[in-house]
Every structure is written in structure tokens, then in C-alpha cells.
Image (cartoon, rainbow, N blue to C red):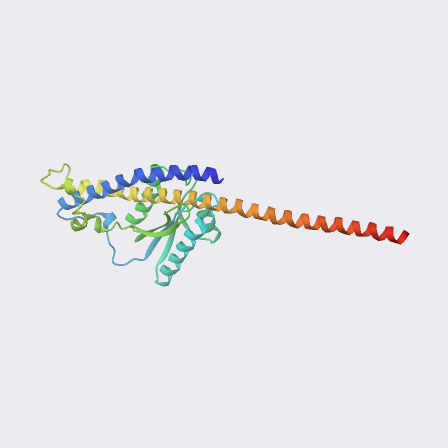
Length: 272
């Protein structure tokens, strides 16, 4: 399992590296179109004054044997729930991964949806499905905020739990000051067809899907790194246990042989 996890980890790292330029270019494109828009009022950007309900999406794996990978995500997600409930907000759940689903069902949480069976190798279609369900709940007014909880990959030994606000999409991506350095290609006079607002309305759902897909790739790499480390530690611990038990067995056998020799000697002396 350690060797299989190491191979999957290399593939996951390659996918993350290929994804980062796409995500950066998407952000630049949205900033450029946002600059051309005189006023932007889109459902995914709507900052609601009263947040009554929050959707929490923990990204877990479909399998165990990965150390604290699943447990630390669920602990953080449940901590977020307790904090929100203390503030007087209701919490809904969107389960991603069999481990997360089983834990939430065991705790009798009501699920607004579940997505399982792909965490080892997520595709963009999986991210689209998750993003579409979250956007559907947000635009319908059933939730006022969406929070994503997942493991960010640092190395095979280190994964950090990340809590990210997914919806509403932050207006910072339209901030020209933030994008000034990376947006040289979008400068100049452009004619937009259709209107910039319509282009932005099409780009924002894609941006949302991109954020979910990136989180899925981070989670997959973190899971394989955690599993590789856990299996290495398990092999090491098993080897140490075998050595210790072998030593104990040899000592017991030697003591039994010594006892038998003493009994034979004692019997011989008694005959004399």
C-alpha cells in the first residue's frame, strides 16, 4: 500500500502543478472582464447582510488507512459547525467521500447531497457536480454562505487543514489593485461581445468549479501522502513488534531448555 500510495502521490502532484497556471489565468481573465463592467450584480457575488444558514463541505476520502487524514478534516468541520450554531446560524452539510458521509450519517446530520467514489482520482466533472449543487443551494436562498474544509498538500509528511469560503465569491477577484501586476495582457481598449456583465456571469461558475477542482486535487495528494506515511510507519512498527516478540520467544525457549537440563541433572544426581 505504501508503494501504491507513492505512485498515486506522484500523479496527484503532477495534476496540481498542471492546474495552477489555469487557475491563475482564470483569475486574471475575470479581473480583466470585471474592470470593463460598470456595475456587477451577480447572484454568486451577492454578500448577504443576514447570514442565517451555512453549507459546510468537508472533503474526505473513500478509504481509510491514511492516518489522521479524514479525522482532522471532520474535526475541523464539526468545530466550524459548533461555532456557527453558537452564533445562531443553522448548518447544512454536503458530504464528499465515503468516510465523511458515514461519519455525518452516524451523527444524524441532514445531508443536502453526497458525492462518493472518486476521491482517489477526481475529475473536473466531479468538481462541476459539487460546485453546481453548492451554487444551486446558494442562489435559491437555502444557504447564505458555503464553507469548504479540506487538506492542503504541503509534503508527504505534512498536510494542513484549510477552511475556505467558497460562496459568495469574494469581490477581491474583481479588485483592479490586487490584479494590477498580473493583468498586463488585459490592458488596453477592448470591445466585448457579448457585454462584460454577461461574460462575467458565464465565467464565475467556471471559477467556482476551478476552486472546487483545485481543492479536490489538494485533498487527493494529501490523502496519498498521509497513506504512504501511515503505511511506512505501520511496516516499521510491525517489524519492531516482530523483533520484540521473537526475542521474547527465544528467551522463553532458552529458559525452558535450561529448566529441562536442570531437571535431568537433578534426576541423575538422585540416582547416584
